Structure formats: C-alpha cells, structure tokens
Length: 465
Image 1: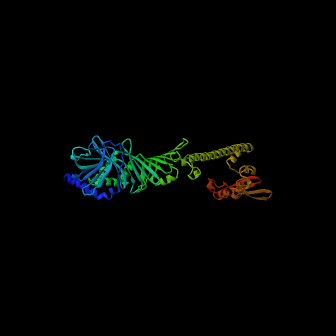
Image 2: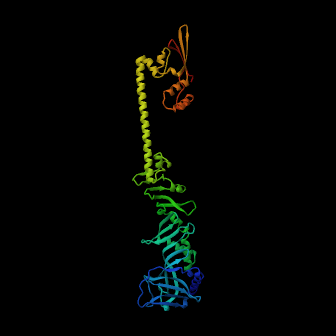
Image 3: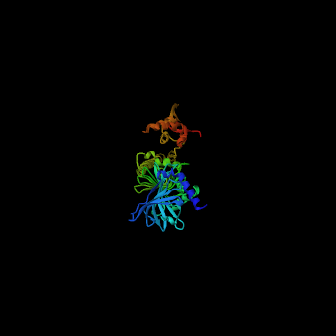
C-alpha cells in the first residue's frame, strides 16, 4: 500500500466521523500559549499534494511553539478540522497538546510530523510529505463509567504515574496507576480499532468509560483508598457486592470519621451490617488510646443494644467496660456474701457439733451432726436436728405408757421453711422442691416414721430407696 493510499484511508475515515466529532469542536487547546515573536505571522499553509492544510503562527518558516495550530483535511474540497492544539517541540520532535471530548474528556499529547526523514512538523512545503499523527502520551481523563455510573478522573502525578479517582454517590475511590497500565490501554485500543488514529481515540474513550478496564487492576491491588460521605476512610484491598460494580472494603485499615481505627477483614456479606454496627473481628484502636483485638462485646459480656445510648465507638467501648465492671462488682459482692454465708454455716455447724457433743457425748453427738438417729435416743435429741414441726404427730396412751408416732410430712417441712424465710419467692420455690427435690440436687427425706415410747425412740422406719 503506497503513502497516498494510506493518506486517503486516514482522511476518508476522518471525514466519516467529522460530523460526530469535529463538528462539536472536540479538540480543544490546552497548553498555555507563549509570547508571540515580533516577526511571526498567522498563516494557512496548503499542502495540496497531500490533501491537508495547517493554520497557525509561522516564524522563519517554522510553526511558533506555544501557539495553537489547526490542521484541516482538504481532500474533499471543503476543508474540515482534523485536529487542533498547542504546538511544541522536544528533542527535535514535534508534538501537539490537545483535548478530545466525546464520552470522555481526554487531554493528550500527539506526536505529529509531515516530513519524510525527520520527526517534526514543517511549514516548508518543499520538504513536506504525508501527515502522520500518533498518540504520544495521555495527561488526564475525565468521564462517566458506563456500568457503575461513577465519575472517573485520571491525572498524571509528579512521579510520572497516574492517580485514578472514581467518584460515586456515597464514596470516592482512589488508586495510583502505573504508566504501563495506560500504555496497555493504548495498545488494546490499537488492536481493537485499526491503525486509524481517530478510531483509536474513539476506542480510548470507550475503554476509559468501561468499568471492566479497571476492575481487575482495582481488585488485585492492596492499596485502594475509599473515602465515604460520612468521613470514614478505608485503605487496603477491596471487593464488590456479589457480581455488582459497587466496590466495598475487604481487608485493610478502616478509619472512622470519629477517629477510631479498625484493622482486619470485612466479609462481603457483612458489609452492610458493618456500616451500621460495631466491628468485632479485627483489631480496634480507640481515640482514648485503648485497643481491642477480637470480639470485645463478648469479652465484656454486652450486646450492641446495651451500648445503643453511646454515639462513637470509643464511647461504646467505655460504656462496655463500665457495664462489665458493674457486673463484676455485683458478682464479687454476691461471691463475698456467699463466702460469708458459708463461713457462717461452717461456724454454726462447728458450734452445733461442740454443743451436741458436750450435751450428749461423742457418740450421740456425732450421729446427730450427721443427721442420723438410733433407737434409744430421746425426743430432745431427735429435735436437735429434725424439728417436730416436720412431722404429723399421733399420740396415744396405753396402760399409762405414752406412745407417740411421728410421720414425716413434706408439706409441714416446707411450711416451716417458708415461715422462717422473708423472701416472697420462696413459697413458689419450696412447692416446686416438695415434689421435685432432684431439681436442686436434693434427696428424699431419710426418715418415714419414728415411734417413741415414754419419750424414748423405739422404732425407726426409713424412706424406701
């Protein structure tokens, strides 16, 4: 294919898109113009043999750097704009800085030449040839992503990389793109949209507004920054809501607007709850200098509802500690009371033992301490450990001999127990224990019936096992 045919292919393609693109003046000047030399003149140079013309300031047979030039196609008679921008040279190569507006606004630098053996743009028609335009660099990109609706902004950084910013209704995503990432986009656009530079630009615009272009780069990075409308900031690895294009935190550092910092993973299915509730799995740093690692609600034995009156996470943490300390004080008080009761019982049992042994001797006193009875004991001995009120008493006199039969009664025993207690709840508890002593680890009362003759125990009937 000869140069003339290549030229015609490019220009025909330009003509097809001229009404869509150039009719809207999509290439705009962007570089700040420099001062104009005294002998510079505004000219329109016709390169009739090659079907294009260039308008701009010319001085000493060169286009003036820092000034706008406009290139037109004249292959079909009436000229139409191909491209315009601020012209400049670097290392003997000619460039044009221009802004392209369509689906996106792309500020680009084009390498431009019309000489055979040099990479520059000449105002001398004698050494000119076909016009060559190719993308040299991208400075910035602005537009709206097709699938997610986020507003995209890409700008070059001082380190020669690019900062990607995507603004959504509820948050802003930030990420640093390496220069090779944009270079690959240009390569992909070249592959997809032929070698016509205008088609490539349209392809770039399409690539830049496609969320899929950035998705893998974003999801594979561990240094994404999300800034939410409420002031919260997340830095780390992100994911998406199922198959959606809504990017959400996954694992990293989450700084709350109130100053607390959470470090750890955030499962996708819990994200919406995480936005509303207390993070509990990772490491939390609070504004008062305290820290927690793991589920501190379980640690302090509280629920989120218990902490609902507190606003910030630090306030909730302080409240959780306060409630926990109050619980511990109550438990300590109860334990102290229990220990005191046990000590009182131990002392009472010790005193009772000494008293019974002192009154009845080692043998009888020892049996009574163990709540055991034997034939020959007196009623007074028995009532030391088994009150007469526990029994239904049947008394008879035969030939002057007094016979008493004591029948054990659960009802009488617990009635006696209730009468001695000041707790109103004891009544219900006692009635339950009467029929179900095993509920409290109890056993059946060991004695079923006792028979006394003239105040001396003669028969013992034990409760069947």
